[in-house]
Length: 452
Length: 174
Image 1 (cartoon, one colour):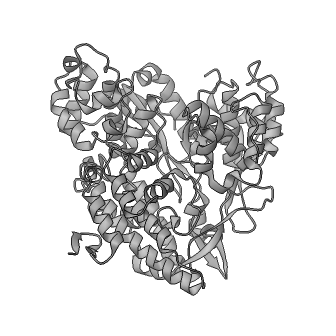
Image 2 (cartoon, one colour):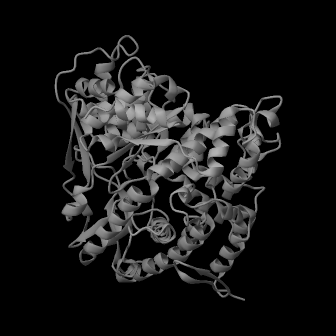
Image 3 (cartoon, helix red, strand yellow):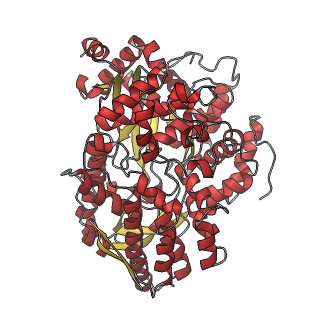
């Protein structure tokens, strides 16, 4: 019997019982690893800024699978147009990878990655995703191996590669991948922001497949590797500009909102404070958490296992705030109270000094010197890791070539900024630099010491 | 950190002859120099071009703001893809590398002429072995970098590391 889900972004999502891959997807949705995504919010603590932004990675991941099926149909269409052979087996790998792409997210997603990094655990959520999929003691691997021998390895491999190797991989990672096409619409809807509209149907109708240069651009001429990915026809240029602008404005107005970033930093500080006490004898008194709490288990020596990681989610941490508000450790107690009651640190945004980069950087240096000790103690927190450009990624490096939007100029795919003055104007990254102060007095002191 | 972060940027660009092409190249040069003892205290994480530092990104912004370095942009002829070119705004004479990297300036000159993918692979190989502690780094780098490791680029990257005494320091066959 076919299964159906209703979704505010996509309408009715059907899992057709005559289509084997749909039935596999349905079984995977039922696994504990996937069900855990109900307890991880897509936008972390954004609800502190946008009260309705409580949608989950569970709903998002199902939406991504739905988009992936649309993109696979696009590949079929374009393979026929280009007189190339469509490979269903590769398409199925991409579909399941799309469904499972977020199973490796930790609680509060990117914030948790920074907490891990501060403890010298250099494992991204993609790596966790690959490990969870391949876990021989998990529920996902047996389902994949039962579908086709070797299928699990192929799906996991998608998350291990830095670059795509074929057009099917583009479904999961490209300028128009299934992930972006869901979160742009979902996040806009659920936050209620006016920013971020895209012309989905027109974009899908104008997607073509072409080979682009994969190597990062350099001055010295080289023979660049090429890979097939999604591009757009020239007549979709306005829709393409709108698509990139949607992503840009969502970063600017939602993901990098100062209240949200402040709350993220506070959660990060709380988690780091907990991790310092894992060896304490009276851990329950110090942290408010029992020794058996999954957070304590994960932060303990050799605790960074898949089993312990899968026990972590937003609900665990939010549900522990009440207990932690009674902790002996003043930092843990204070931050837990603040998170329960939305008493955020006070923000000073360097944009207040004006747009001039020189003024902003000079004032940043001045405030850092003024509060040097307090920054070390995290009584004042510096947030200088966010920057926005037309290809913004949270915490990101230079954008990968295959995620840069290409437009067909005649038959040649060119990066959109070659054809669009609007996009060229937004290429350069603009930093967002904020300080978060535990108290109003310090924030006001920073403001008074500004030099214009 | 012995010096302000922007001085590391200014020193690297100056040592390259006053000009470095590509942000990715700048990132990998800084990473390799830090592994040799430059001491910037930049924090690195793994991103799709290998080890990357947001602290270095910020240092570049500072270097521009304090008129040490200018970032210009050029575009690849074939597809219009943009890349950065960093140029010294004024002479920079401070000895940032000191005794920790005695031939720092010569190394930077060499790195600035090295293929950017080779630098990426060299930095990634070192990262995998020394930071992520992946014992089977040769398999892992091919998993992550795919066809980038072909056409002799991985071999060239390992030779580069061998030349500067950074691990992994074994030669590999094509």
